[in-house]
Length: 90
Image (cartoon, rainbow, N blue to C red; front, side):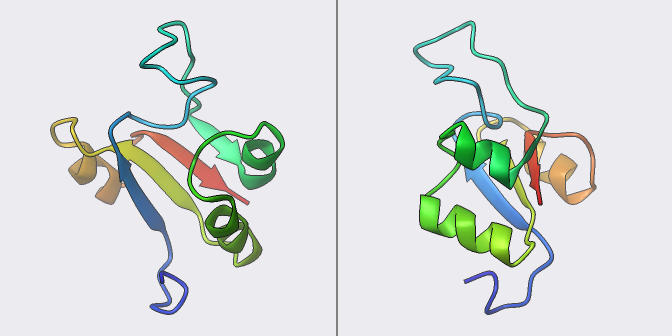
């Protein structure tokens, strides 16, 4: 849908504050990625979003910022370009 609207960035609001090495709810030692490439996310089989959507974003060079919608002011920080969540780039 973002491609149809010609957006510059996809904002993916989730229950956790980014993309992790493992599920942080069941693995407290999981580490959050600050930045990732699409290829790293695909190769490591990280659960960013549906694989087809992730591949489409990669192919269209459409970056994604994954952040927690539950964290106060997180959306504001993302919109202001501050370091929040995980940034996926091509």
